[in-house]
Image 1 (cartoon, rainbow, N blue to C red):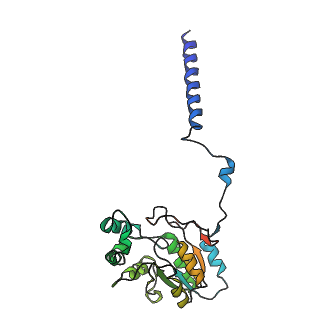
Image 2 (cartoon, one colour):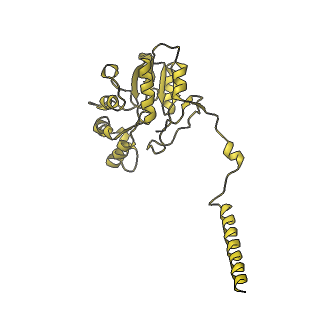
Image 3 (cartoon, one colour):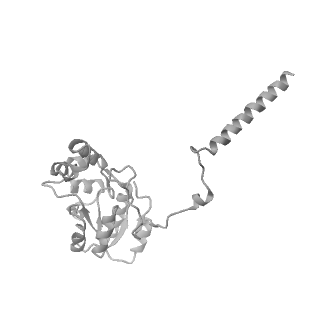
Length: 233
């Protein structure tokens, strides 16, 4: 009799557990996903560094351009510090020359070089390409960004060109891309893509890190450009 009671109790507990688990699986907290949702992908033209390299196999050394923030460096720590110090409630710090003087110098020592950026630069150096850095940051009296990039990305001194500070104005990078005859430009923002195209250069999108302070996030591939896979870090 005791065994029967124990068996019945176990069945009731199991049934209750199963019912609770089944209910949780279909609750708003766990809506699940259909096969259609799993297989849905956005029509983005993804490319790898190896594919870019292969596309240049029969091409002589070219001039290549890079944006800096979120393309090569995860520089959000400096921007976060600047906002806290100069304008905690808004983005007015971006118009403050004192912030940019600090950002273009010692605060960039806290910026993390992206692995994808390192791999890209090394690939182009091995090809013999000439590399230029064009940032939307304003120019300041002094800057250490050039030496920081050279160190972080292992660029030989004789291959290193000083960083070009174009400023944030719309289309500001276009004249520099033209001037240096850059045929391939990498950047994370829509402005990078449109500025490069306006200069007659091919633009490839680099993914902005998810934890970047630069919001809102861009819609990668929305301009029909190629997007570098796994380039968020």
